[in-house]
Amino acid sequence: PSFFRVNSDGVKQPDVPIFSMPTPSFMHDFAITKNYAIFSDIQIGMNPLDLLNGGSPVGASPGKVPRVGVIPRYAKDESEMRWFEVPGFNIVHAINAWEEDEGNTIVMVAPNIMSVEHTMERMDSVHAAVEKLTIDLKTGLVFRQPLSTRNLDFGVINPAYVAKKNKYVYAAVGDPMPKISGVVKLDVS
Image (cartoon, rainbow, N blue to C red):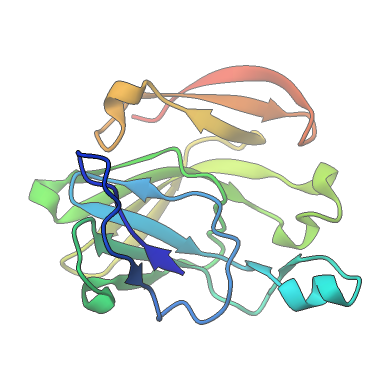
């Protein structure tokens, strides 16, 4: 995969190839903070060759340890990418992320898929619980805090708070996914 940005004049900047992601991950979304872009390398992966053989292009790799990659938004190459292993953290949609402690800590809020083995084959068995992930960039320690046990996904925030600390998330209630039975307002503070 490659990371790139578009400058304020609308001009695409050069690609930053990410070679430290050796297998295709189902990277459907990512988060940004003021200074960083945050990517997930999850247990759900893309298998294009399986599609040619009549199988599913998406599958789970239960033995893989999920990781979160942090790269400066203005990086010129992958040398500044840092990976943090986060066992059991499989996100498809990021809700928001921000920096704390003078930029030494990254906080990300996202629904974590609790049962990756059901993704694609049995969508009605997929359960995503919203979590707050905190990454201490100084020590490399990663902390997880569940924010809801309900089956929530497709979370949105007030766009004025993208990459800034926010308080409220509005998310769809899966009943089960992809059927939606309502919307909740979640206080992430």
